[in-house]
Image: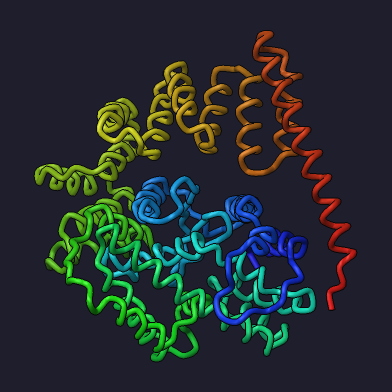
Length: 492
């Protein structure tokens, strides 16, 4: 499997308690808290997330779509009991209809899910459901239900759930490899958790101002598609058991709520158009969106024209893309996504000065848009304005100190300036944020040998090197202790 499952399974092996089974939903008392604390969940999630960023081919670093998902998710989280808990929503380029919650508040969303959602409320209903898995601490509660003798079943279940994200054949193999009766018993608890996530998710939807009926409509559509295509049921159903009883429960909860028609945000429609326009060949994408615009067969003309502009840009027809952008500007459409595309078109024509002008104005209106910030540094470097590019990265990293991509741009800027010590120091932060401590330490050691830099810069490197070595030693110690604890536990 593409995601290294042991990054998830090993912490579970070490932390697995010897509690007995309980009927219904387990109580979140002190026992389950001690077995898998929020801090432990966060570390497990961070470990899996680092691996996804490094090794998962479908992981998409699209700051525009990721920014939209995180704003949408934050709107829902703000209505939950998780105020102050960090959530991160990330994108996977995968045509299957799926989303999944990982320990520590990391929530993955497939592009196929965004395209399958017929409204922003439908997409929000899935995100609200996944957020609720995290806020209700379902992983901790599931672990709290296990006993040592059931460890093989838990492993089979964990492999199946992770694999089922988009590989139903692997999931089926994992399920058969485990003890079927035990796994079925675990899935029954999973269904209880699904119902609880539905209930809490509906509350988040209502409080956030979305249409609560969207959850039922989306799940009904998924259920219908699973009946029509028994061998290719949506991946979401493999990890989120959907029953008629569960849908009826959702419908019962919403039937007394007032009807509320919620219009889709333009950003949602443009995100869907961008994903669609990025699929298949550029020629096919151009033909599809050109036909939509020509025949007026679209949900929203602005989104359709934006999709056509993206498709034209992919096809390197910059004039055609700019024509669509000009048409949208005549309609007074305001969007950071449009400004980002306009800058990309300028860069494609080798007009870095034009791109920079667009980006500087756009950054005033949309100061938190990460895609615009990255593009601004690239434009400055293309123009040879290296010192200004460096100033932008330094200022930006004071606000976003964990931005791996900005550290990479800063390293590129230092390299252009010939500042080798600072280049290696910035690259060290890239590796450290990826969880590659050995590579981060090696970069700092190279910085020490760079032969440039002043006393203060060398002191900073030395201090950071000591910090990372201590962290590496601590992780090695914990890994050794975990291995010893695991070896002392009987599996059966």
